[in-house]
Length: 529
Ligand code: NOJ
Ligand code: MG
Image 1 (spheres, protein in one colour):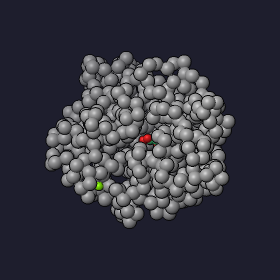
Image 2 (tube, protein in one colour):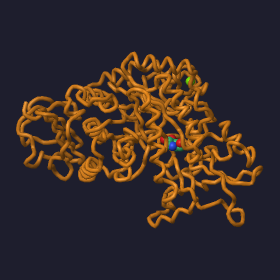
Image 3 (cartoon, rainbow, N blue to C red):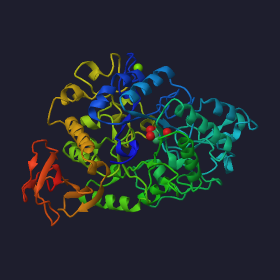
Image 4 (cartoon, protein in one colour):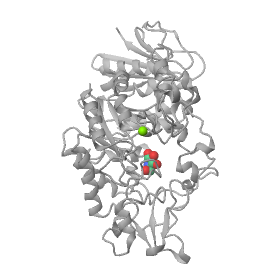
């Protein structure tokens, strides 16, 4: 077993607006999460990552923070949060907050002060620049949500930078006072017993000091998001960011056993730099490559080898299958392969991150145009970029609104909720929910699955096979990513042993060589027992 909780544990992302509403306003809240802690214990996850709960105008649903040291009344109070942490800890669960350092809300008092005059003491806390020729923006940077990354501010006659919405002005992380203020906010929560942070857009926190134009992207295709027109040469992954990450880590390291997780969308070789030169960076730079990789045995096998090979000495891997910004896994790979994907995530080497509702098989929940909430969908409509279909309410039971709220839910509930809900699926031995619970239990029961080494096994074109090994304990996993039954090929095929679990939930016990792996089936196999 790995020695630390964030290595052995399973992370579960809660999007608080959508998990459980306790007060009937149609918006999930902290007391709602508290009501559902026993479900999370039953499922077997260990680490709750709660997306932002801070006071916010909600232009980007909490990723526009107006006060880093408080709780938005829609989510509850500081006392509710302290109650959540205490009750989670009493059950052996950890609580991780989402920290949003790259930008604040335009309603944050710092920005209000900053924009009040060019000589304001907080002017340099944000990134202001003069207009280019003819009053144009200072450079060609594009917002991640479409449109220019600069907004002109009439009263002081300058532009300010925002990598996302204009309601999300970018902080200037080159300013030491900004850094100290943000580290103080981190300590505020660490003092309350928070077990760590997931840091929003860690790789975008610092931009080019000279504000140089980004070069055009020769690979841009019509219909892609607007920001893809440019390469991110001067807006992403700037060398200076590593020092900031190390400082954040030092803030956490002043407390026992905390974890720093970074949201980082970069190719593997650049991603792993975020562990830090002396492993003094993020302990878990999020690895999103399972979300992006073509869903084939060859591509996933190659990804595992590349990622494992790129890890610095002593760095701990991690894998993410979904989050609140991406199409859900069942929408990406289909409901049959979602079972295989769950087995993959929960048997790979490294900390897994699960997204709420994926354990029920939620896919792309329909959100009619009049119900759209996501500002990205509103800015760049019709490209399929909107994130609402992945953020709909958790489905607890067959009662009104799936038991999420007694009021009117902020996003529509999946119409399938009468049959797709926790209450129904937990009593169904063949459900995806039961499969998740069984996989999590196996991972706990067999240390080779949580802490063992990993080695790819040679397998057929549609079959991904790997062995997890710790000492004499050997476990093989075979996943059929194809739609036909296939024999287990290759010299690596285990000759004798026991099937511990099939995604089809209908076989365990001795495995006879030459037997077939069915279409969309995955098995976990204990070798030599
Ligand atoms: C990444 C977050 O996950 C996303 O939801 C948000 O819109 C952007 N960062 C901006 O904070
Ligand atoms: Mg509520």
